[in-house]
Image 1 (cartoon, one colour):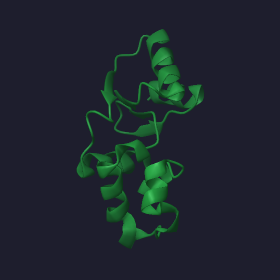
Image 2 (cartoon, one colour; image 1 turned 60 degrees about the vertical axis):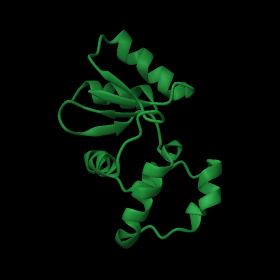
Image 3 (cartoon, helix red, strand yellow; image 1 turned 180 degrees about the horizontal axis):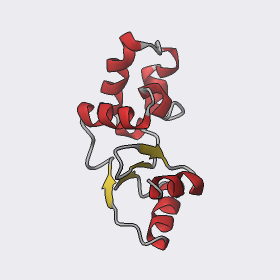
Length: 119
């Protein structure tokens, strides 16, 4: 499994701590440094079963600069959202764990981390 983290994020640190406590075999991806491509973001969205606006941190300064709250949230705008996430990875909700079974979870709670571990 892989976990996308920002080391400055307390939820990310908690998720990593729980993975370590459970003896999980995982890879850390510091997604602000190792920025996911648009295709990788689309893949993770498919694995999550979510749309890009559902994993976008709309309170970030760059989100406000881009006016994301006003962007359409429909199929026609999906690529625009994915491009914004790839160009501004700070907008991506974290942490995201890609599970071994091909699914993924936004692991903002201990329950979500445990869910990923059970897959």
